[in-house]
Length: 252
Image (cartoon, rainbow, N blue to C red; front, side, top):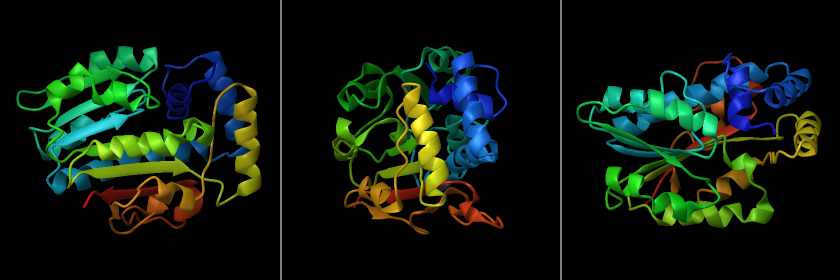
């Protein structure tokens, strides 16, 4: 079965992917020739967002749906700003697990852990021993949901899942989201979404308003919910050339 983490690995030039991943990834490329650049733009957001969050005093991160590691990893960026940052990654792909254990190594003062878990089961993530050993949920945490929510259909009550994750975090915490959208080219995105579903893979592009709903009553920081290349203010000729919405919000 194709897997989004391994498809991203293929688009980014990696080798940790299988025939099913490459077949669907190539179909995406046929319909969206700039898909490799979009995948890179999404990963670049992680670096910029992590710099922002660490610069605003965040020392604890949960990255759900982390994907196959690419350097700089989130923990490398966070610990480059704050060496004592603690990062917990979560994913449910065994390929990601193998790489995570090999590459995500703690430093002398910071800590890195990995949870083999599914975003659909937030209680499994929040109650895990690894998370509880690394993070203090009475102190602010940055929750990263980068290019993962599109893998869950509304029928699976994804909004309740995200709300459960938000509710577990204290005041001063942050939520960072990127999400693919059909807002910029509906016919093409709907076509590739249909192709993904035909292979058994869930792929749900969502509108700007639908993405906004994931933040609940948290305060979205400037510049708001914008195309991923425009967060916070990347200098590109056409920010809508990458079909993702991106935003960060803070819990009051």
